[in-house]
Amino acid sequence: MTKFPKSMGACADLLYTMREKRLAADKIAEELKKQETALINHIIDNLDKESSGAIGKHHKVRVVTKQKPQIKDFEALAKWVKKTGRFDVFQRRLSETAIMDTLAQPRSKGVPGVELFNAVTVSLTKA
Image (cartoon, rainbow, N blue to C red):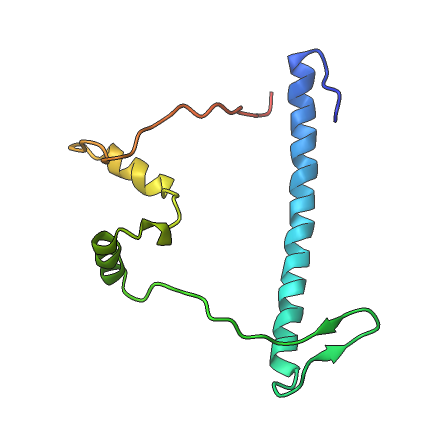
């Protein structure tokens, strides 16, 4: 755990330094993810589909196919969810932008079932 400075001004400077380090690490991680994805795609495209995979010195790789759900007709899905009560098929996350845009409309009466709360954060700007 990092020991924090006593002065809030020094904390602001440390926050900036930490954020810059994290952003630099995020860029490195993003580039590594791109390389990883490219290699995965290369393996999918080039590994013989009939084989049981390829074995290296330490690891084995094989191409697998999994079925995953995706929405084809949202209205039909929403109707089914309402009829069956199977709301568990949805993840409980709002589109913050869409909600705030709706609330900003001149005649908006709010969004049923949604309330705003005060999220406490900090604003870090150059002095």
